[in-house]
Image (cartoon, rainbow, N blue to C red; front, top):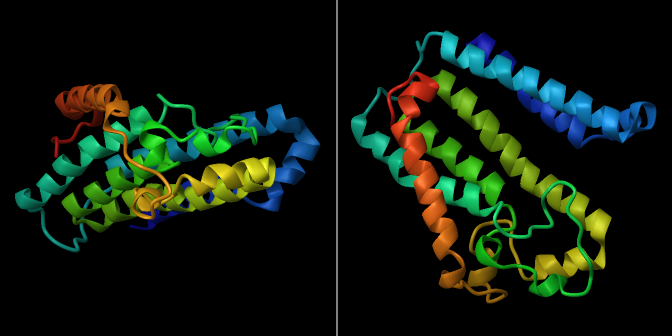
Length: 226
């Protein structure tokens, strides 16, 4: 257990520590924005690779609950939703993406497709993916592994909102008024509406991607598909 905890701490700590603390500004001033991006990407690649290696190597000895085929259905039901959010998040203009710009004019009408549901579709895709696998896998090693991704993504939505608000000012305020972090919150509050025709193609693409990953899951991960 100590190995997976260490790997998870390194992954989460380096990811959030570099991107969302004053250390980012210090490093950018010293090595430049491009140098920081290279350092950040390299560290993320190394720590993520180490976490995955540990997860696939350590023994599963401690369980919150024993494997239950009935719980596998939680992952099977939630994974299509996660993949749809993952795919459609890159099929619409979204100012939350890295490097995206946002102007005051038209910011309030920018939300379309999946961004009507949440302005952070990628992050929520990861959260849903992680939560589904935490339910399906009752061992503590899996819980540490998947919860690290959920934690980064959940905190990431909040930290990203703060960064964009500081960067875009009034334009972000206008965009945030018509969108929400939590899925469907803006729609339920009457600040936006669901337009199904905008989601038809993205949903089909997401389902196809999920079907391919489902089919090749064993070959890709070395584990039985759940």
